[in-house]
Image (cartoon, rainbow, N blue to C red; front, side, top):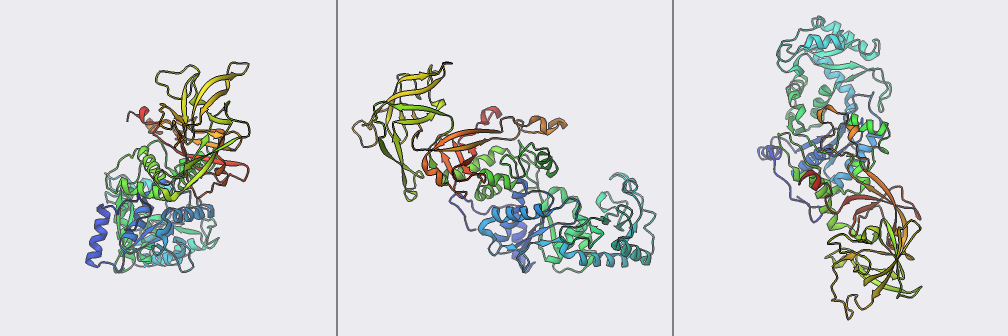
Length: 570
């Protein structure tokens, strides 16, 4: 398998890949063809990322293709915005994999279930003619009562014995829009005694007099997911229809419909795997939409959201998400993945690629009293540790500097090795400084430190080897740029936001976003959306879409260390 970054793992091994490998050996299919078929009723989230990586990864590893297909069969919930966001997210996540792997139509568009509405209608007509489908007048409530429960056989609809001619006539009139929403459905005629509820005369079509975002008002009826999904697979020549475990009970219906409608050779086969469950988050589209609609977040791409677009805006790279999907594996067992696993993958990826920069988030002024006003001492800093090819840059040491407020304590705690009255620290890439005195405001708050610098202590100087226990970062107060920095954290304070049936919104983290005005080294004025940055000693950051020349905005992607580990007992 081709790698995309130094820490991209080799192709994993799992039971689904073993199935595909066996099919390749046996020559079951002309080529491996998978698909990723989201419904355009919301933005994709980290759970979808696992499925995307699995389906596109398998296609890539076995020389096949993966179709991107929109399951657009429910116009009441779907929207062009979601359609476009899905395409954007998938292309971003798979990156260079798209070349030769992403299956699209000849015009470069994704496949759509709505592309097959006419064919699907024709298939339904053929089922009616075979005596395998009928038009039913039961309401949803009546249908549920007739269906029964798994341990008790259901009762067939009194409309199941309509003649073929009557069913064909009613179905055509359903299509023509003669009947109101919910008044009639087309149902398969299967087995009302089956212990599998999904096989008890399932609904294939329902009336929905709603305009579709692609087909407009052309249709008054729309196919159900179970009907459209398997037949779309068959039409497209999908070899391996890979979905999450909750669809396992739907597989008998999948197989029955494929076989009842046509002689597909070879036919698609469905396989199921356990979906991703991640703690400290919710991944239900309905609940994510609730967060957006109630303005508890700024939108679907809020960097605190588990959506792919939110993670992209936060600065997570596609390589990190792909590596995460590989590391968590593919099994049939339901499990809960600790979000720390994802966060550590993000840290590992950013540690290898993020350019190092100096920034002070909560500034405290330092005046170097033995350095002249207007003087500048250039200091050389590397852009990336252990990578000479990444080059170096100059940062200006001046009389006035900014350091972090947390890097000074007037009354130091035990084993505090940063700056204190009479104490010394090394300024990274520069000199050792000593705090000689301090200035306070009327309320007694320290507002300024007066320090002296040992100018022989820089690398190569006579006292370069002199040891001090603390090293802190800094920026010049006269040669820096201002920026808004958004400090993002986990959106929920509890590992299971929905434990014991509670409202997940009651455990939202009130500190999931803090905004500070920071001082940055001047090179960050030229920051790009493509690059990732480590503000040394602080965290990893990226430029936000809101950023403008002269009004920089950075997002914290993730902290350097897991600040939640101690609380979680890890």
